[in-house]
Length: 608
Image 1 (cartoon, one colour):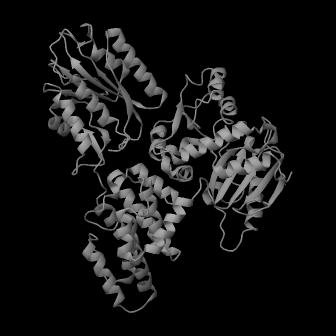
Image 2 (tube, one colour):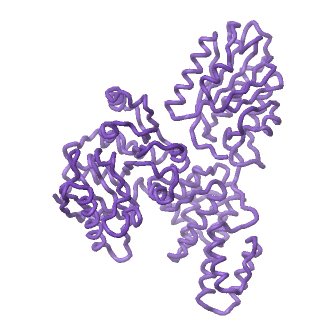
Image 3 (spheres, one colour):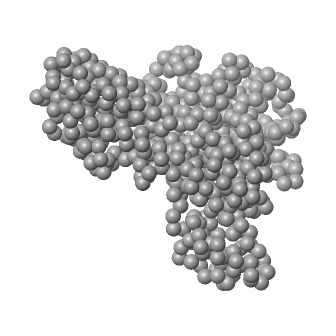
């Protein structure tokens, strides 16, 4: 039960002088607010208010709903106080029609602890917890559950019948994740080997025939395999089995240490995915399944390069860093001691600590600068290799058509491939285009040869404005660098969604941009009719900008869930048909901005 959207909380706690009210109101309101907004959990933010009269209550609720919408968040409403004959009592004794307000605002969750209320509230599409005990004991009990966590629970504490019974309440609506469970840790039970490791082992065993494929890979069966293979005749298959077993041994031990030493205490799905992405891994599972998947992926890919121990060490250190620890975390230390990997952990710690923001891999940058509505008549290519200066560059003729431009990109790829050093691989293809082409072009589907460009390269799109001396502005470059750094270190999903209302008046939006109101990545929650004009306005201010190429459901939630795998994860989304396949983006990193600034300021020459 993974929740991916942020939440905004309003605690409405009102003492009515004319009502007999327990003394615990303020204590319960403060405790509930503190538990729900605990920064360690990172579940939500919000405030505590009281209502002088019904109009005041309505204003507070409308403002909270507006703040939630502006942040792309769900609204969570907690109401404590007293009930009159027909509604919630404001401070002046007047009654507030809560069901009507809740139905109008449609928060995702409502927590009601109203003294004297006799019936639970049911609102379509809203999960409502209603206290059935007095003296605000339900709020105090819920706060205690959140603070203590549930050792036997899942990744999140769920608002369901079991929780309602525990705190003295009833619940209506669907079960929903309330806050992260602070004592949850990924568990590895039954199979100690995950699907990836099992598929690899089973395939090798079926080819060998010297060890039965077990229905469950228990730890005992996994350990038995090693002894049987070591005592068998030395063949190519047994060598492969030994190498695979050795690699998976590091992953199995790592999963056990994560569980035993509580590294998973704050290790959410998002944190696991972000840590994996930082060391070049990806996975579509969640929770424990994702943890096991990326550990095995690290081990098996590392084995292919002869360094499975180092690969798992890098991932473990990244996981520890994701929860604010480092290579000194007890889980990492225990794993290193058990598998004799102290040097690899020290190396991984130094690598993770020193890694700057940006992709430090070889990339081919192709610029398709052109005036609207044309395609370029020349295409510029730069082979950007970290640490190399001057940058190899050249230019290819085009004919102002899409076919001609994609053919020139194919020539650029061939040119770059001819200049690779032994062992180098051209993985990243960065295509810079003006706004009118970004609005309509899907470059990963370009086919200059027999393959689509996205089939053999990680295709990322950028904006040509960052390379152009005519559009260079020092303050825009400084702002872009700050946004990129802020997004890179953010713990959650640093995303500002823009809806149709925000895009309704571009002059007003321009003023908001110039006023510095947007300091995160930006996502358009729909495809505006005047997309080119919107992109031309936003791109100078927004180094990370996303929008749908067509109207589609589910992509914004998927974007928040898969945020840690982006931008590289977009390439797999296009291939796998996930909800993110409708998403377009420009995603600049610090390396790109430095490269663009050098070119725009003519610190390096253009080949054209």
